[in-house]
Amino acid sequence: MLKLNIEKQLGDLHLNVQAHIPLKGVCAIFGRSGAGKTSLVNVLGGLSTPDSGEIQLGERTLFTNTDSCSKAVNLPPEKRKIGYVFQEARLFPHYTVKGNLNYGVKQADKEHFTQIIELLGIEALLERYPNSLSGGEKQRVAIGRALLTSPTMLLMDEPLASLDLPRKRELIPYLQSLAKSLNIPIVYVSHSLSEILQLADYMIVLNEGQVVAQGPLTEVWNSDEMRPWLAAQELSSLLNAKVVGSHEHYPMTQLDLKDGNHLWVNGLLDSSLQNSSLKVRVEANHVSLCTSKPENSSIRNILSGVIKELHPNDNGEQVLVKVALGDDELWANVTSWACDDLGLRLGCHVYAQIKGVSMGPTDIAQSH
Ligand SMILES: Nc1ncnc2c1ncn2[C@@H]1O[C@H](COP(=O)(O)OP(=O)(O)OP(=O)(O)O)[C@@H](O)[C@H]1O
Image 1: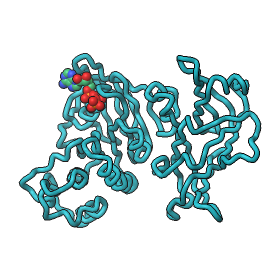
Image 2: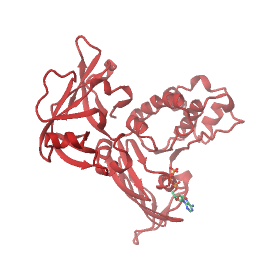
Image 3: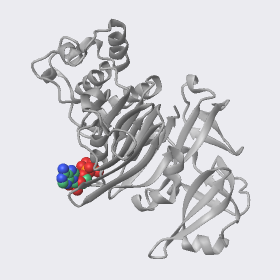
């Protein structure tokens, strides 16, 4: 685990973070502008020093000044073995890509070099200079440069923020392969929930310098702490599902949820995903509720569950209903009229309907 217990006063912001982050996979740091995300990453990387606390990366202490029995420790950035990728690639313009990649590498390891450039698809760029690269290519080189220092953790502070949408889309699959193949924790700062869905396994939500939620992605995503961050129109749930197979006649894929419910999603998923675990985003506005099992419905997904929470909105027009599907949870956004008409109450058994066409490729991501 990466264990963090730090405090730091930064102007008006009191950064006070206690967190446990797994040593493999992507941990997203999410929060409003000014919540302290970059400040936290800077503290991890040793670019800024906490007023007090402790940072433990596996067996290594990166920082401590709390334990009165032992010596204070504050490893400088170069001794932390941490790779850093910023919003901007920050490449040296007068070095080729190869020169940039090798910058900071103490002992050349040809095999490691080949592995990293293949993983990032930058073999063909090695002799080029940064000013001839696209934003996405520059960022891939910047990631390669960070990885070639053989870090024990990778910090990425909004690495896609400066890219346009097509470049973002181009980079995401590379980041997904990194997340799968690297055996080091990646701490990934982002404002974008769709990036987080596609990349992260774990999530920390920061608000005014404090952790308001942390844990596995699906748990935090579905938690009440996330509701204030999303308008009811944007609220969505993440379901954990396993790929079963495709429909015999139609281009749809069947997924199984843990509680035995099934889900049909639009399109055929890659056959390599057979039996793999996925996260599926379902928007609350795409879920309708029935108190008896619908028959002759065009909607393919009819999931049986129990109402766990009801949250009427401020103007009384709509009610957000949380439905428990075993351990998974599903938000439905219904009108107050429908809620009263159906007599929806806590503990009611309901059938949640989700249109198969409402879940597309950007709503589905593999769990690592
Ligand atoms: N050295 C400093 N001195 C004073 N205030 C600081 C310092 N560093 C950061 N802050 C303040 O701390 C707050 C958090 O900044 P930070 O950059 O960590 O936020 P963020 O969550 O990364 O925001 P964004 O999403 O906009 O990048 C801001 O209000 C910032 O002005």
